[in-house]
Each structure stands twice: as C-alpha cells, then as structure tokens.
Amino acid sequence: MNRSFADDLLADFAAEAEERLEHLEELLLALATAGPEDRAGLLAGVKLELHTLKGNAGMMGLSEQQVLAHELEDLTEAVDRESPDVQPLLSGVDRFRALLEESASQLGAPTSSEMAAVSAAAAAAMPGDVVLLSPGCASFGLFRDEFDRGEQFRQVVRGLAAN
Image (tube, rainbow, N blue to C red):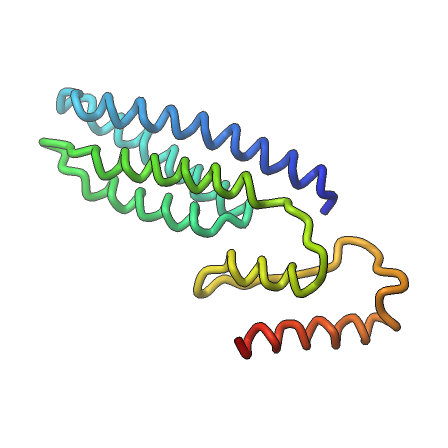
C-alpha cells in the first residue's frame, strides 16, 4: 500500500473516530441524566457507535482499539437501566482516544529493514493476532531472487522468535 494512501486512510479513520467518540460522550452524558423512557434509545446509540468503532478499528488493524471497543460494548450491556453509571464507559472513551492518538503517531512510519518491520509488527501484535507481511514494492538489487528474500525473511522471524 502506498505510504501516502495509508497515511490518508489513517487520517480519515482518526477523524471519523474522533467524531464518533464525541457523539459517544454526548450520548453517555445524556444517559446519566435521562429519564427511564429515554434510556433504551440512548443505550442503542451508544452500542451503535461502539460497534462501528470496533469494526473500523479492526479494518485498520488496530487490534487494541478493537478489543477496547468490544469491552466497552460488553460494559454497555451491563449498564443498570434504573440507575446508569456511565463513568466506566466515559473512562473507556478517554482510553480509546489516547490509543487513537498513539496509533496516529506510530502507524505508517517507514521501516528501514525487514528486521525493523518484523519487530514493529511483533510489538504491535496481540496474542492471537495473525501478522502478514508482504513486500509493497520492488526490491531490486537487495536479494539474489525471491527465494533469497524468503529465506532472509524466515531468518529474521526465527531470530525474533528466539529472543
């Protein structure tokens, strides 16, 4: 994927996510003071925003944000409809926002070598994640052929696994 395109995609995701987080905060603050007749609709709106954030984060490969959005969805299910405590959800929104800012500053950064790319992927991966690294451009002159490239990549991954 072209770096400029990836940066643009991440910027679009971040902008939309921020809008959704702001709307989520509005819904949660309204929920805290809403009458019983309005709570179901507000909770449905909260769930929709969290579900969309979860899906979009997953599409962007932001597994930590995806997991957090899922956890917040579960918290929403547990909200007491008679006396809703929204503070844990508001704290989760703050955490999501912090993760979003962190990701925006780190994603899309070029790597200088296969080792750097593998290390960056290993650091970002969570247990159970699948990491697929695929060259996005030609590497003329860096390897004898595609088999040499594959072998060098395997050596890098083995070295990481040994550490």
